[in-house]
Amino acid sequence: MNRIFKQLFALLLMVFTVSASFTAVGGTQQDIAKSSVIESIKKRGYMKVGLSLFVPWSMRDKKGELIGFEIDVANKLATDMGVEAEFVPVSWDGIIPALVSGKFDVIISGMSITPERNLTVNFSDPYSYSGLKIIANKVMTQGFSIEDFNNENVTFSARRGATTANTIQVLFPKAKLLQFDEEAATLQEVLNGKAHATMGSEPFPSTEVAKNPETLVIPTDTVFSKAAEAFALRKGDPDALNFFNNWIAANHRNGFLKERHDYWFTTTDWAGQVE
Image: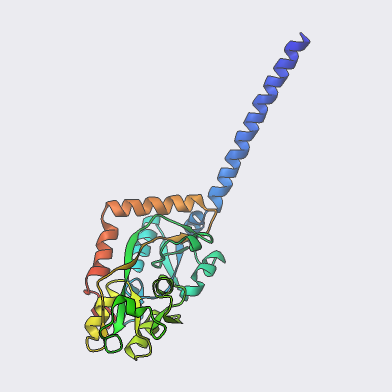
């Protein structure tokens, strides 16, 4: 009888332990869900989006309003969440620290996925794909081959902390690199003859060459550093990552992302809004 009692007690203890474990796991999962930035956004009624201005991802129109591919994407994302989008422009080299410190909820700013960045933030699935082309000063680089750009007498300009700066340093390590906080300043150096070249994603190279045919040239059709762009969010938020990934997948399938990307990157129909 004593042995039966011991067995029954052990069985009851096991049931209690398992039940407690499930309760603890359930509580933990609920706590994680409540702490998600998605819940904060829903409660607040608007989503704070970090971005840095560069054409045609995000830019100011003639009235000073933000327009561009990222603006369309973020506004659609916010609408689908039943909230508004609030944009927080910051310098590119400070955008990840600003996200980590909680200045905004998510980065939607043409940020390509890299292992280095992934050590600090989590990335969604890609919502866009791009590559870089060289934009050069026509006179300063006349007769240049690609190999000629990798020379200590050649100067590139690039936006500080951007993929362009990293790509230039990797592909043309012998060249000098001038770095600026704003995309416009990098091109101005080339226009002024203070830098031989810069790099950018289409349609930026083609658009700028078309506007400055006497000064600028695309010396090669080669596309460098093909990249995938994604939303960046703070680590430790599986619910937000799941939602963003599902939203991106749905908007790949319904054609929204392709249609908006084609408009901003394969046409110049929008150019009159910013000139």
